[in-house]
Length: 225
Image (spheres, helix red, strand yellow):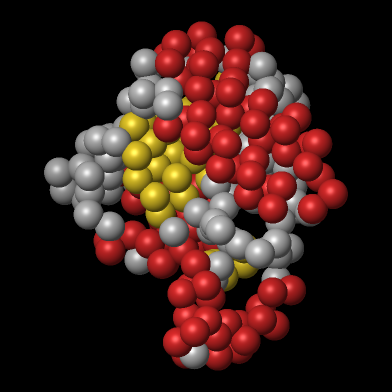
């Protein structure tokens, strides 16, 4: 944590998932207080120093009373391995969990929500994009300041096959007609995502802020709103 940045109390949903497992220890190492919402029996997946909150991410009442005194809520819950045929799951899990988190954030006096969204628009995964866009809308009208982090695909352990596409992306970014789309739907690495989420937590906006792929790679490109 840089000089002048305040220590924050962060409530995280999806803390034991692919990104949460990297984010939680990084936030703790930087001196922040972390409260992690998990299912019963998952506490062993959390690092020492993390406060455990047992609850159901789809049921805000199960954890709303334990959000305070958090000033920030990071929402990482979502259907794993999204696919076009999972539209019903996006409604049941992604949107239901966002509704639950919004209600809990309001009840707990949270001032900033960091939401893991998805790059958009894109020519594929339309139902997934639609669910994430609706989630952004719901958070946006909640009155709580928000950061929408919009990766397309996050490379890392267990998520390595798209490395084969890196040369193709380089070619598309070099070609003016396809440059914008290739950058918007670019690949990011898990360390880059972790750093971007940390930056978002430590630099809350006054309203709604978007972090597309280019900002995930270099968060300081964004002016702090």
